[in-house]
Length: 499
Figure 1 (spheres, rainbow, N blue to C red):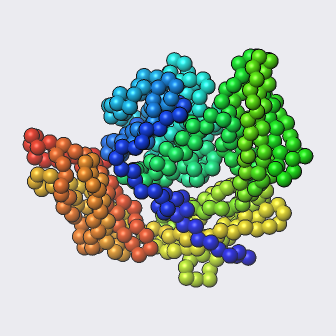
Figure 2: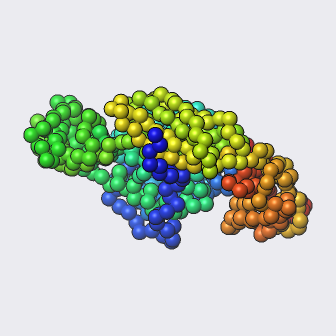
Figure 3: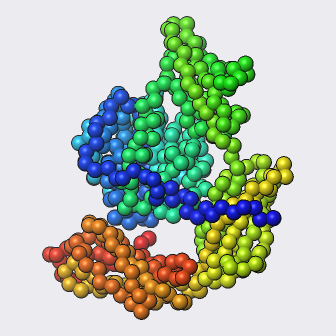
């Protein structure tokens, strides 16, 4: 019953291959763009000081080439915290110099990660004259997240997209791919990025170009393209209450199947649905006004290939006796999923069955420190089946580093020590993410339970993580923040565990 398997481990790490190199130096100025760009910045206690400072630099690098002004690009920041806060309104900083300084001066608020509340707040501000937003320009939201939220984001995010906001998401942590790909504008390949905070420069140009596709589009164009729909957007042209738009669209190889829709002159977007997959449509926007003549605008849009499920399989939350399996997308045409799993090597296979509306399940009663082959099969209403496989590894029993501590060893040097992890440890990987200066990674033998961390700048806070390495995978790591006191203070150290 097993179909041909395709290993899909790490599909969400799309940035790891084929990306552009980081940009260097000042970028050429970009004009002829107009839009309100809002950064949704994770300012909660789940983000370290180092990560927060790296994200601020990324934001400035992203917008540095833009021309700012009331007829160009305007930018604002909303903090994600216990209570959302706007750092400054859109129309306050209208030059590169003042905006750069404002981003540098932005301070972390700490608190809870109430992203849903921040999204609802953003919906108000993106269309508020009081916040300096403009009514007739493209709206772009860039959400930079460590992948964690304490409240629901799906409903407020969908409301934003329904109002014509283009949503880009940059996850610097272990975010849920299924949740974030649903939250971002479509397709996720263009609007969703997973990247380590130290590697943000890798995606800067690609993300900026995608934003430009939105704010430079001053004619009829399509966004959120899927296999059966796309959203048309256009600049506001009509002003009279009696004015309206006529939209005509048809497949280019069968123009006789033309369909027509009419919307009021207040509209600047319209969702077209129930379309054929992999089909190019000829679309015409005809402004109808009794006062002015506006020439029709036309465009061609090709829908995506028909979705199949599962197209992606993900393994997460691995433990000694269980792991979590999820897949995407979920389709109405699927009546159920079968999950086959068994150890490698071996011939023992077990079966789980879930309904067609589910996109995940937990596989339990497994052997520790074992590699499993997991195959997810979608059973369609038509009787067809589609399968996709991935490998999963259970954790070693007690595979966690404990009691990470620091000892002052002199100027700019700390000694990091830890209690050994259980099981057959092959070694330890120690990563030091410095607040200033390059990060470093050390690998030591299983008998070594301490390392010296050097070249730590005075007065800085540095993130140190220790992770055990086993035969099949890494174990659970432990991270702490190590504070190096300024040179003028008494020698010593402070450390705190990340909230």
